[in-house]
Length: 486
Image (tube, rainbow, N blue to C red):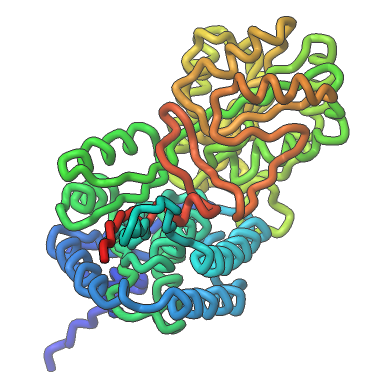
């Protein structure tokens, strides 16, 4: 008898795109890697031209009816979605932990933050209004109304795949837009889960579609397509410029939150010892992989040595380890590319004369994962590349200053303008310096509030437009003026 060949199926789950309320696979997949181990744990569809066309066509069809539903109806669906997110918080947190490399406690915090943001946007949209100005013209009224902008493409990064997603999807959907979301290629699963939860909450097919794939393939196809009327992008300044350039062809609106290299100025009179644990935690949170962390400290020379010593002591106490370990403070970096880039940036800085005070090397305790020691650099001058480049990793620069004006000048001397921090007991000085700092958000004597009611976004090459708050909701609308004569 002839032996029958046994075919072993691929044990890895392949995560398909979500189009028109259904899972849709493509012809090509790519691997998903667990940052804690370096192991491939799943696959995802690499969406090509056909799937991009299909998802945008679905969004365009559904827009015609979704925009005509009442705001209260849309808000109610978002409220149900927020409830489902909270109910499934443990599973979502585990997903984030595995695909991002985020410590499980931090992952759970992001899930709960996402639910809070969904609730906020659902309620804030109910407060969006137009105007009828009192002009006094006979038998005439001028009505200024807001309408949804249309089909939205939402492109999200790997570092906060849920919270950045809902800051785009929730306001867009709430005002009557439809969305095609493209998560970062390394972290697609949490986005797919949210889309499926939205469907379970009652969101009609086609209102929220998800395309998985990388930036050079799927992302470029999306922003080159004529259908979207707005692209909401969070990511690097380099890619953001490409998004703006591609969108200019269609005179299309872009809301972008791009890179940052956020300074903190610590004055001698500041109550810094009590704030130091929060400063350390904020600088290294998410393994330094977010754009409005403090990456540059300018410290008054009178307190510099003491500040550096105490900051160093707290930094050395941070536990670096696998994301699933409850004792971990800093998990791995998300992927090999960013892991290698941070190593290269530190090496270049050292070659230019910077001093590695602590860290500055991979952690080899956990083979396979992308672990990098929390790093403090000193002797960094304004001319060095690392003083002007975003450092998306657990690296902090600490520099002494003697002249406050020079500290302000160096704080502003980068292409970025996302966030800045001031620590001083002199509130008059804080107000004066806040006016001088070129940043979209400034924190004074605190680390760091991020309320849904307050707008967030950058100046200079840190982006255009705002997320969160009433202003973030209005980004997804167009103003229309109606001259009404009778």
